[in-house]
Image (cartoon, rainbow, N blue to C red; front, side, top):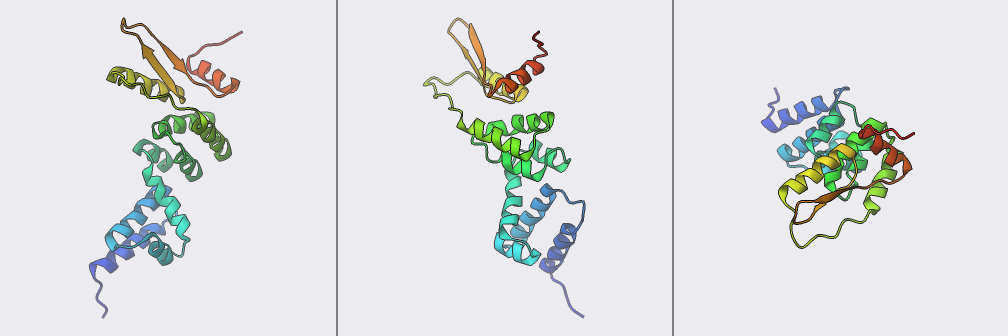
Length: 186
């Protein structure tokens, strides 16, 4: 009779879980991370034990760097693994969730999303102002960026008057923003 220690039993349980056909990419990434943590394995060792390429394991693990809400979109098959990995390429990580929502709303393919990510990454980031913006202005910008899926800049003067700038990448993108605002042009 062969005795199993806790490590062997844990490894067997993780492997059994990984063999489920309905496993989402996020669940798969969590299982890889659990193997690495519990069994003190490297990505290379996990890949060998599972008969996968190390790059496949590494790319799956990267999904755990997404915001929780975006991971949920992958879990519910609203975003594909390819789309999720493309979102990780955004330089401004605050844009991940709004761009994920836009991807779903517009049904963007991975290729179209890659193009959008490249365009967003090429946009010049605003020069940091020496005086930090008030919290409500920063929160307003973040809320508007979530709503429009693009960069928004809110500025105001000492009297409280100001302006809102909404960035767009093309005429099609401008029309999308008009749709969000429920504005029709004749």
